[in-house]
Image (cartoon, rainbow, N blue to C red; front, side, top):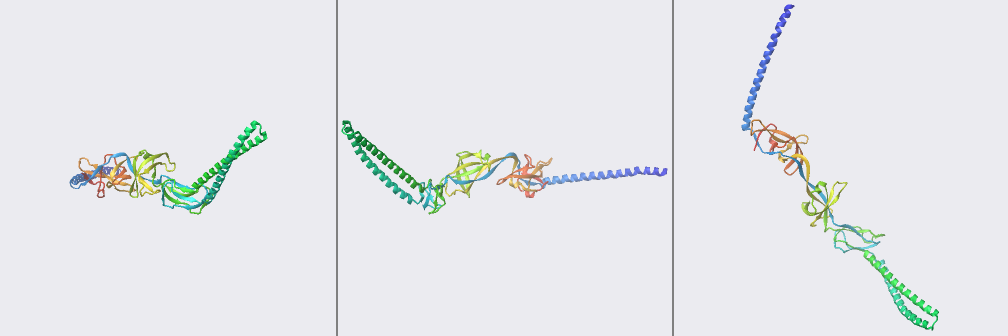
Length: 396
């Protein structure tokens, strides 16, 4: 038993030394292999630097704290004046002289009411006026006679040739004739006032244009009747004077100047306008401020249509401007670009590194992006379809 333990104890150190020797040999082989691979890789890398590095054009990524967008905002073209024309009195519509689309001048006759009753009433009032004038003439003649009688009887009364009763009768007759004359004159005034009122009714029975413009709506036709005034007959717009109302953000309003010229666009044509005023109140529904522009030339411009105003709006936020050709599609809705990563000890050779980016705003040939880029990175400007991360490149 003692011999077995002794033999077993003596054999275990031999096994440990053998294993250690094998481990040392394996490590030596690994180190040797790694050295050889590294040497060969360095040699291969030197070969690539000289012959296989791709030539690329680059731009320097410069970080900015905002970008400017060109926003197109629609505004409505409206007539300077637009109103419903109607009669101020009741009646029956006798004649309409215009139709939709007709152009009219201020004062042109648009429509009239049936005026037969007014004509009959005018004849009555004219007769009353003539009767009042005749009464005035009669009263005036009687007054002359009565005044002469009064003067004569007054002399007789003073000399005692007539009684007081007779003199009082002459005095009362004179006063009565004066009263009849006053009544006749009042009747004349009343008749003339009635005729003036009738003439006003005649004028109110004819509808005339209150400004130059175009007829856009004809609400009623001949024969229509209405029991009260204010009924709309014709809708007229002043299309010779047009203006554009635009709801703009408060930030955009600050860049506008009253009296300056601004260009609108509509169906490929430009509309030149002048900023007339800005309404100093924010619309609670749209959170915009309304600006009013006067249209300089109204030729071939239709009221009610839309026109677009292009304005520059600054948007705060850090990012980079890159050429459109510098970007390629990546995953999950992102875009990618390639930046150059310097290699130690190599002045002209760099390795490509993929940068994941989010496109914030695009223009015709450039994009504003945010992502893994840093200020001053050298980014490949075009031809990225032939590139991949890790490729060796040289920039021109």
